[in-house]
Image (cartoon, rainbow, N blue to C red; front, side, top):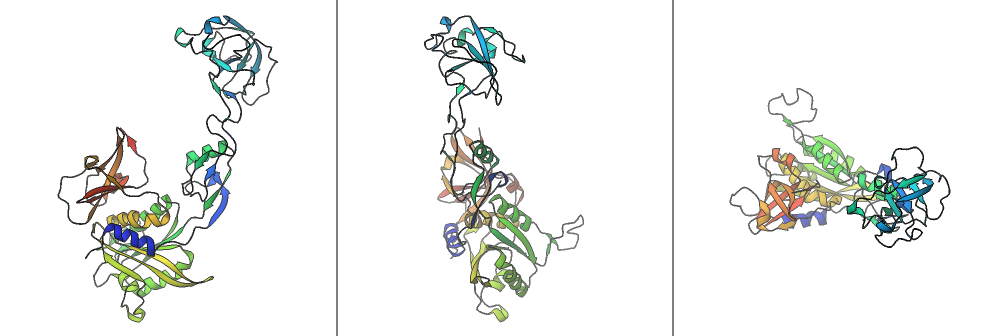
Length: 428
């Protein structure tokens, strides 16, 4: 009886659960791609002070005796007695009933409540000095709102109030988050230390020295799983090292034991089938030579295509702190199987926020082909069409369509689910 995808996902989550995260305080500016260990909140508001949202002339509607929208009651000309630029000292002392020239981002005095855009006046917008007087030329379409209190004024905390939640625990640090956080006084963050993953590729046939003539040897296979999974780990904020062994179980066990103390998780690719030279199963399953009974991993064939053969376990080691057990996840050797299994079973261990979402039948666009028992996993492209999440199967065979995918489509007879690979969604 083959194990279902969901049952195996739960089993991997339970058997290969990682130790609690270690955390550290670090500068946010250098933390791109890392994960937050604590929520991030604004230390100061944005804006920090009342400022002008336009280049123009600031006035007090109260001093001018204007009611809401009373542009017609305003004098056609205003005296200008003050000049305010962003980040510079104010030039001149404004007298009541007069205007102050002000630039975008300039600090707006508390007694001024409206900014008239420079294009609504006869002033030269590029003049080095403020004019002594301006004539108003407010378009008819703008007259009702041009002198409303608060017009073109950015109030304190209007964009982000102090204490506002910027990001949640577990969120990744993005360029956008860095920019927003620094603008509200957040320079450091509590971050999880990157998980350390060892990716072990197995097989005598693999060529890892990818020179120009790589693969010239008959029967050689160009190795791609290691760099692919290393990049997938990096996208989840983890650091991965790549290792290669042939089809010698003793060599594999020795390598795993030697690198385990420096890693939080070991991921192997290949050697999990039922053949005579399936090295991972021979090394960590039951019945290998002098390690008879080692049996530290469990192997199953899932009711899933691609990537049916899978394994999971824990490797006991002696570390500086005493004995420990390092989680291991054993993936198939085909690139398609390894890629699919990584995102379904390993990514959740590394904190991936993606979870399978069930889609209505009408939201799935796929090849009209009868489904077999179990789960068929296809590369897909997620889009948003008039508010609906649409999953479209990527056309092509084997690995090629995965390069265009931003999701995996899990097709079963009774339902269709989709899991994001972390790419952006395109709205139509």
